[in-house]
Each structure stands twice: as C-alpha cells, then as structure tokens.
Image (tube, rainbow, N blue to C red; front, side):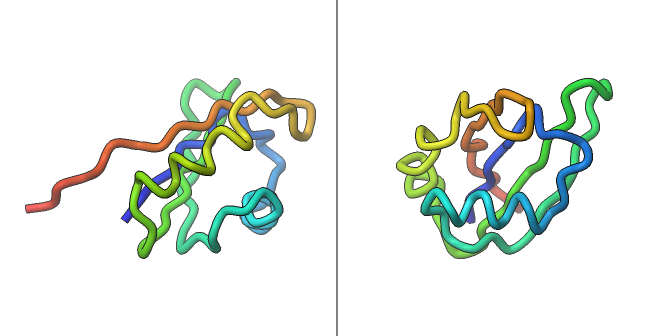
Length: 85
C-alpha cells in the first residue's frame, strides 16, 4: 500500500478532479483520498493506492512535483510506509 501526499491543492478541487489529474500523468487509479486542511492556506490530500507499493509511486512522483495546477504549485511526496501492528 502506498500513499501520496499532494500539498498546496486548491481547496475547491474535487476528489474526482484529483483522480483525473493523477491518471492523466500516468498514476494508477487511487483507492481513497483524504483531505488535510493544515493551517488553511495550503490544503493537501493524501491519496492512497491499496495495491501499489511506495517504490512504484516514486517513479511517478517527479511527473507532478512542482507542477503549477489550478493556480497553485503542487508539492508531491511519497509518504513513508506504515507498518501496522
């Protein structure tokens, strides 16, 4: 399971728009999207891929990191693996 942090997302962006954007740049279809409001001026989304490992997401991440989308420069990182007990 891999998670992708997409920071500085315009707050009016829908989950469907995020999914479509990622698919446009070659990412597999995501399983869930969780919004993170932060301090309010740079909202983010954590996009989860149940059947994709983090090392695979790292190959796609450079395609959209620092991209200007919907009047915001995106900050995209692959989150560290979670080891659930």
